[in-house]
Amino acid sequence: MLSPLYFYRATPKDKRKKDSLISRFLFRPISYLFASFFSFLHISANKVSVLSIFVAIASGILFLFDNQICRIVGASLVIFWCVLDCTDGDLARAYGPKANGELYDGVAGYVLIAWLYPCVGVSLFFTGGLFFQANFPWSILLGAGASVFDLSFRLIFKKYGELSYDLKTSKKTSKEMEKEWTTKATFLGRTLHLIRRLNLFFGIDGLLSIWLLISTIFSWVDLFIIPYFCINAILWVGTITFCLYSSRKIHLE
Image 1 (cartoon, rainbow, N blue to C red):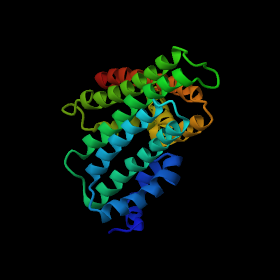
Image 2 (image 1 turned 60 degrees about the vertical axis):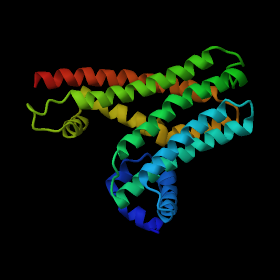
Image 3 (image 1 turned 135 degrees about the vertical axis):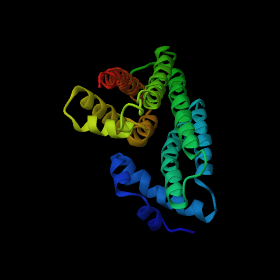
Image 4 (image 1 turned 90 degrees about the vertical axis):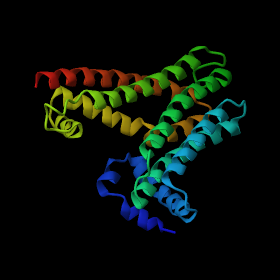
């Protein structure tokens, strides 16, 4: 059994710095405890990722029940998912990456995004919130829209990273080029920096899970759905803008 301190030391400093403040001071420290526990049980990083998929599905299902306790537990499971999302990485760094580890980790994130927003939207439709009355049809549309925007901007950016860089004509890797653009005070750099900052602060490992729990406790779920619909729409527009503009820049270079 490896100690939590071992997992802390195994996490690179630059990795901890890249975490959101909530992840750095809440999710990540708790994940070291879970990583130590899972190492005692000989549970691999991939198995933790698979567990997080079921946690994501369960969190959404609980929002569909007409019961406040179930909804609060569902929101709490999202926080637990964030801890597991850090834990599988802790285990992978300690024991070495497993085959298809990034695939399982990515699927877990996509399942949560695809499933959570619509379920919260359905819950808002039946229960109402601070501004929306029950049976307000926009509740479901906003939940579905938030999911579509979130998933699509991530998939677009991922696909862009796979296809847009012609490494045969450029000696720089995609990560090196993105780092170069981010540090420059150009339109491209500012757009990429904004996308990263918004996603880091408001994303799954940031404010999302905490604000979901708070809004669920006070039955203000519309104050979760409305802002995240808008935030994800902004990220979607920003991602498309970045991808189109940077593709043109690479072509000109």
